[in-house]
Image (tube, rainbow, N blue to C red; front, side, top):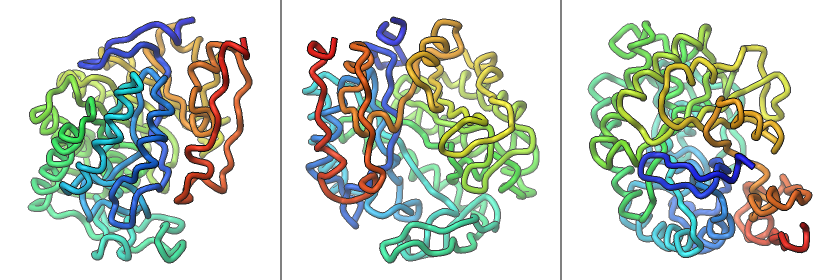
Length: 361
């Protein structure tokens, strides 16, 4: 089965091609410090070829999700170390996903007005400690602030390596800050970071180059979501934009690129916009990981015909900590309880049992 063939992605040697997608689980403290139960959770899932951690903010300014773990303080680094140690002791590999939520950060969490590519408020409501509240109007990030933002990304990447992660992933998808710069629905700037495709991609490329320079391109990766409307972020013509992004990331030599393909049948958001991953594949020569409601059959097909080098599975990993073993055994998958996805306790987090793969076979 192609899913169980080994794969080299930069400095990462994956024993299989089943990647655990980043999953927000909200089990850190209000100060964004990881907790001991997180070590148990990630170690339970170390059978994945690679774990991509939950999205974790690079700074207080970028932290917009309650109880999310961060990467800007020494206290956070120290609390992450038992997590990575537990994963490694269980035989796994884990990279840290670095996050700045941009206009989706509520002032009650960050203490200030949110920032974005342009001063356009997000639709819907923000998650806060006081419950859901309308999104605030962001201010346009100033040119003189961008070097500091890039420095925050580099600082967080170095902290992730100090914490024992095997690499990092830049979250440039799902309607968050870098995605707000990339796509023309939210980027109305008229300076060097707006207008043309090259300008709108500039922030992502500068962040990627800076992190690659600090920790090595072989430990640097990126996630994008090129098509469809994601939290109010959409592009009018995504194929040329993300073809350019793919070419520029290929030049940097990153370890892998993860693409979230949204299709008409997608269960979390759907779109009539065509998928862009074929164009990305044509312009990116490195390891390509696809994410998008894949079941085993579709995953096998994507690997067999060369559309992807690995497949990222998200929600199936919540209730199936030993997902690769279940796939290998052809065993049924358990269903997760959505009510406990973002709760703060052990329930629905580390209490899902593993399946005895031998008995299942």
